[in-house]
Length: 316
Image (cartoon, rainbow, N blue to C red; front, top):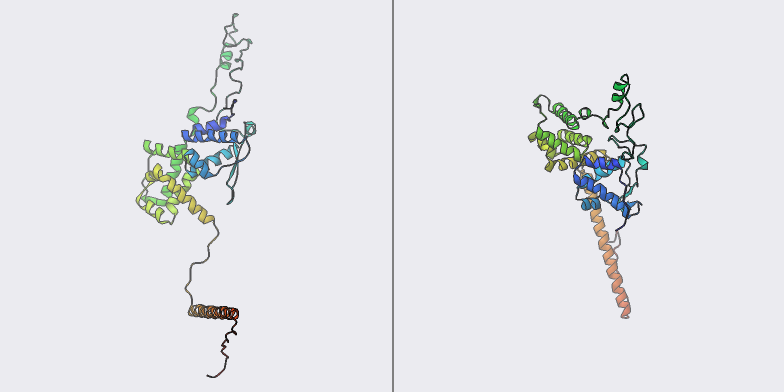
């Protein structure tokens, strides 16, 4: 066992703390893999990481993309002959110009000296001489400790915001047939779970696919089911996969025109070509048989077999 430690940036821990435990465990394992490779780029396909971490390929892909946006890793796309390569950044120096939304404690918080009042005495110790009453109130205000980060009350409700967007899209596509939905406890719990696995944009894109896709699955879903089925964890991964597949098909180059029936002239030409090819094959087989027979007769000391030829225009 090697001694020492591995430095993990706080941004990574803050990212993993808001997600299921298996995601944080996967991030820590990624740092262990980089340490074993001596912090050099290493091959790591999504299939390998999915099997190693016990996560789906979709969750692995989203995790790597999030870490790349946090400047934790660099991803070198793979090819048919080589898997993708990951480069995990060591330390946190590269994050100094990339602030995160989470509050970061002072690095020397445990050794920092306590704040002092105008009398230059530490707050934690009593002051022996009397304090001027004219500045007593202002001193007390200066000693008031403010919490790090924004107050809890000002934190935006991501679940409520996403639910409102889903409801608005539902109303836009269904019109007057759509009955308004309420954000119940069960829907809040289901939507919060999906937001831990997918981004808001991915959820909205899958919801758009649900209402606009011409696939048989999407038509059946929007005719028989609603938002609660869409948010169900056992089904949502499939909806995300189908939506991504359709997006990729839309971005792919246009395919060739649909099949058109052949005309009678084209069919006749194909038939005549087939007859000619069959006759040519029979002629070649006959020449090969005649050649082999003459080779055999030459070995036996016999004269070659005469070859019959049909002359055009000759009468029988």
